[in-house]
Image (cartoon, rainbow over the protein chains, first blue to last red):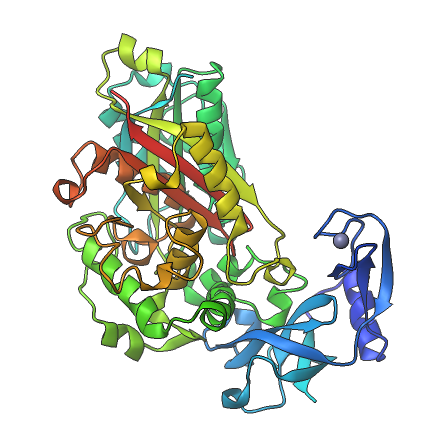
Length: 128
Length: 387
Ligand SMILES: [Zn+2]
């Protein structure tokens, strides 16, 4: 691990995903976002509540990244994807399938795993 | 309303100058702009300076006063940071200050030293324009972010890597005659397609290079320019800035840049023009797909249409809408904090008829578009021949 102090609600969310009780922040108008939030980034609503993350998400876009930052050199090449889980979109590493088989629209689950380079925790999608 | 005039412009050569310090780069560009302007340096009242990664590349914060000192100015000096749009944001504040009558003469510029830290560290430094918690820790890089947008674009509107390659080929061709440009080599579509992938679907030749460089402008009030008989025929007649959520996944559209559209609408209204009045543009093409996203959000093309512009020859200096006649970020180079001002340098010289290809470009109205990150920040400036 390269971090010493925890990053508040970010690490709390990762803890929750690890324990299979992932959640997101939902506003009164149905917009999803990730914590910490006091204001909805989509509409400005301050009426926010935690909602359980759906089990399955859908890949909206992805990239096979070959030129990495120093924190990911041993992970490269790897896939970073944006997936939608109901009302919320999340960016994560996509693992568990050949890079050539990744497709927009594929169904994925969410987990927390370590990166190969630093051992830091990261949000990971796996096909399901 | 009185429009600030561009009285002088200056650039360093854009390229790999790893041993040149930021202060040396900026002194080069800043003094060139002061000399070009004919303004007495004692009349300069303020420095507006753009820089993005100075802490990481040079272990140097507080660069405003450092850079004022480098050009021999004892004036208030502030650094602006908006990722790759840092000096676009600096121009905007300078324009407002001159318009408000708070200053008659200001220096605006930017600098970035990047190649001294090497490609991995520069890749890391560029990535922090994204959301650290929710993007960078998921492996997002700067090329990776634009790759996510490119794939979304292809799915939503169509288009191909060949279409993007045509943009790189065009911008390289434009840079051939620009002595300040980093990549002055002719390339083909095949060269682009055959280059190593950096973040699929984008390859090395879809990306701007890593660049050291600096840029500067002397802006004066209209009264000052006229009272001092300055040769300053180009004015900045419109300014706009837009913003968006920082993380790409929190945007309404993955293949559009609403912050650019907001900045453009504000700048066009400010200048009293519409998109159809624009004759030539410098847009923020950090990656080939970025030129497409910019031209659509700036109202030059409908959404889904700009992908074919370079392939059809429309955006060449000889085409109906010349774009990035300097070579753009793609071929001229992208010293991040210097880019926004360098765009205005190029357009000013083009409108004055002293830039490469000036004889091929008609018109008196130009637009500069500078974007930060995945366009969570965007600035647009309108330049016109006003005297
Ligand atoms: Zn909302």
